[in-house]
Amino acid sequence: MNPINLQHAFSQIHDHWRPRIAGTLNDYVIKLVKFQGEFVWHKHDGTDEMFLVHKGEMIIRFRDRDVPLRAGEMAIVPRGVEHITIAHEECEALLIEPAGTRNTGDVVDPAKTALSEPSI
Image (cartoon, rainbow, N blue to C red):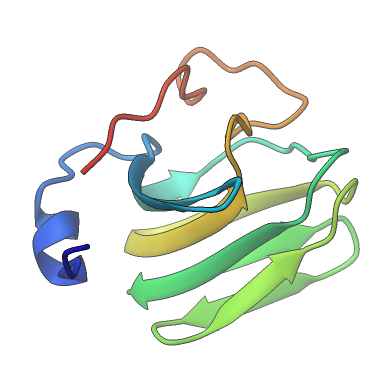
């Protein structure tokens, strides 16, 4: 068991929308991701999804409202709820979700779908 320095771990990520696994917790993975721009509209029918902003700002857009998040803030997207993530400037975030969860949920987008997530 070694500590994970988030600043160092994020410095190892050089591409957007490609999550890296920082660790596992029972049947869940803790993913680190950098992103900028808009993702794709999607949903996860079988699981909730948690976002914790480490650096920067992001918006989780739902069909009926926007939820802005800043560094140190988190939000949980309930299972089955369609959403899109947006960051006008680069954002660093932690995601916690069951192992094997595809980042684009029910949508396959070759430019953004992570087929496998390497570890940090």
